[in-house]
Image 1 (cartoon, rainbow, N blue to C red):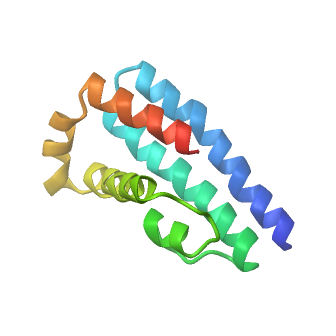
Image 2 (cartoon, rainbow, N blue to C red):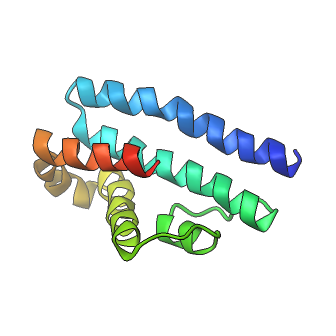
Length: 121
């Protein structure tokens, strides 16, 4: 796969995840909506990483790392948000975090964060 194909690959799979996350949200599966939201941002950041570095992105889920290692000009608030979204990946995945994350993922919390994920995307 050449650079342009790899960039398009990451964009395409990020775009495929948006309706999945929306469906999860619409059906009240807030934890998994935010988990997929993390993946959406991860994939689009990997597209930027490939574009800016002309190489395959590292096998990481760390959004801050990916953003800092691309040429995106983000605000401190955007970096803080990416750091927060990193937690959605961990908290939705590991049992010891899952129970507290379920309690945190109310309709209001998920709406706010999912809207921000879509905006940042």
